[in-house]
Image (tube, rainbow, N blue to C red; front, side, top):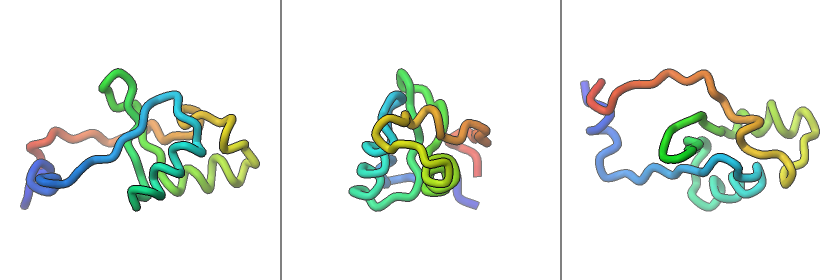
Length: 86
Protein backbone atom coordinates (compact mmCIF):
# COMPACT_ATOMS: atom_id res chain seq x y z
CA UNK A 1 0.00 0.00 0.00
CA UNK A 2 1.26 3.49 -0.86
CA UNK A 3 2.32 5.91 1.85
CA UNK A 4 0.68 9.29 2.23
CA UNK A 5 3.91 10.82 0.93
CA UNK A 6 3.66 8.71 -2.25
CA UNK A 7 0.03 9.70 -2.76
CA UNK A 8 0.79 13.41 -2.33
CA UNK A 9 4.00 13.35 -4.39
CA UNK A 10 3.85 16.07 -7.02
CA UNK A 11 0.48 17.39 -5.85
CA UNK A 12 -0.03 20.84 -4.46
CA UNK A 13 -1.85 21.06 -1.13
CA UNK A 14 -4.04 24.17 -1.00
CA UNK A 15 -4.36 25.64 2.51
CA UNK A 16 -5.99 28.70 4.08
CA UNK A 17 -5.01 30.76 7.10
CA UNK A 18 -6.84 30.98 10.39
CA UNK A 19 -8.83 34.21 10.59
CA UNK A 20 -9.98 34.12 6.96
CA UNK A 21 -13.62 34.86 6.20
CA UNK A 22 -15.77 32.00 4.97
CA UNK A 23 -16.42 33.96 1.78
CA UNK A 24 -12.71 34.26 1.03
CA UNK A 25 -12.16 30.56 1.76
CA UNK A 26 -15.11 29.46 -0.40
CA UNK A 27 -13.89 31.63 -3.29
CA UNK A 28 -10.39 30.18 -2.91
CA UNK A 29 -11.74 26.61 -2.88
CA UNK A 30 -13.78 27.33 -6.01
CA UNK A 31 -10.79 28.82 -7.82
CA UNK A 32 -8.65 25.77 -7.00
CA UNK A 33 -11.41 23.23 -7.69
CA UNK A 34 -11.22 21.59 -4.25
CA UNK A 35 -13.90 20.64 -1.76
CA UNK A 36 -11.78 20.77 1.40
CA UNK A 37 -8.87 22.86 2.63
CA UNK A 38 -6.64 22.51 5.69
CA UNK A 39 -6.77 25.56 7.99
CA UNK A 40 -3.34 26.63 9.23
CA UNK A 41 -2.19 28.88 12.06
CA UNK A 42 1.53 29.65 12.33
CA UNK A 43 2.32 26.70 10.04
CA UNK A 44 0.33 24.33 12.28
CA UNK A 45 -2.79 22.46 11.18
CA UNK A 46 -5.71 23.51 13.37
CA UNK A 47 -8.67 22.19 11.36
CA UNK A 48 -10.19 21.63 7.95
CA UNK A 49 -13.01 23.42 6.15
CA UNK A 50 -15.12 21.50 3.67
CA UNK A 51 -18.17 21.94 1.49
CA UNK A 52 -20.07 20.00 4.14
CA UNK A 53 -19.02 22.51 6.81
CA UNK A 54 -20.27 25.28 4.53
CA UNK A 55 -23.67 23.66 4.15
CA UNK A 56 -24.21 22.45 7.74
CA UNK A 57 -22.53 25.18 9.77
CA UNK A 58 -22.91 28.27 7.62
CA UNK A 59 -25.80 28.10 5.14
CA UNK A 60 -28.15 25.98 7.27
CA UNK A 61 -27.59 28.33 10.21
CA UNK A 62 -27.99 31.53 8.14
CA UNK A 63 -24.50 32.79 9.01
CA UNK A 64 -23.03 35.71 7.07
CA UNK A 65 -20.30 34.53 4.68
CA UNK A 66 -18.31 37.75 5.08
CA UNK A 67 -18.56 38.16 8.85
CA UNK A 68 -18.08 34.50 9.78
CA UNK A 69 -14.50 33.36 10.21
CA UNK A 70 -13.46 29.92 9.02
CA UNK A 71 -12.23 29.18 12.57
CA UNK A 72 -15.82 29.35 13.85
CA UNK A 73 -17.17 26.70 11.48
CA UNK A 74 -14.27 24.40 10.55
CA UNK A 75 -14.00 20.77 11.61
CA UNK A 76 -11.48 20.25 14.40
CA UNK A 77 -11.92 16.59 15.33
CA UNK A 78 -9.27 15.29 12.98
CA UNK A 79 -7.60 11.94 12.48
CA UNK A 80 -3.92 12.72 11.96
CA UNK A 81 -1.36 10.46 10.28
CA UNK A 82 2.38 10.75 9.73
CA UNK A 83 3.57 11.34 6.17
CA UNK A 84 5.18 7.88 5.93
CA UNK A 85 2.04 5.96 6.98
CA UNK A 86 -0.02 4.06 4.44
